[in-house]
Length: 228
Picture 1 (tube, rainbow, N blue to C red):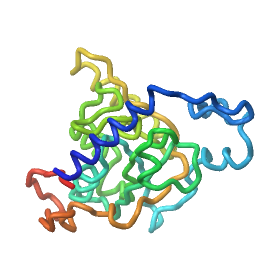
Picture 2 (picture 1 turned 180 degrees about the vertical axis):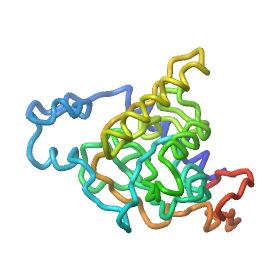
Picture 3 (picture 1 turned 90 degrees about the horizontal axis):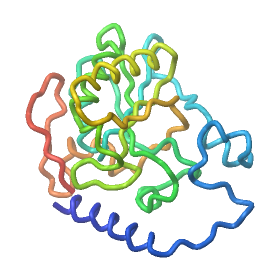
């Protein structure tokens, strides 16, 4: 409940701030710049749009990034998946260096809340990750999942290689047949990953603020309860 009201509060703050928009200084790049505009950005801003160059823990493993709303519940779902060896939550796809949760919640940095997954493709094919991703949220809802509202809650698949990109696009095309509304999930190269504050990591497994722990055991099918 605390998470819900906290996030709604961020939404109201953004709504209030949208009533007045101060003019941006002309030399500064707009937060709406895309990766195609990267060559026009100052060098410091470019590094924040560089690819994620981190490596998996073991040879033969791969990384994957997904955005599907609040990263707490999404992470727990991936923790339970066979073949997933590590999960981290954080911020990516934005233009600010080393952002924190409060800054991302202002909606001014263009970061998405993401889960980065380290997985063994011999045990867990990338398609298994995609199936779980689609099942965890509404991909037709723009910048909103449940009570979480804002660009940081957008739906996104962020790939590390061309095979992931191909499979992501194919799965999106297939999933679109199940929806009347248009899927708004963005499919983009994985960008620099900024690990979120430690209290966000494995938040629901650790019990959250209420101390009510939820199982991260492989294969667990218990309902995931997302709370603050």
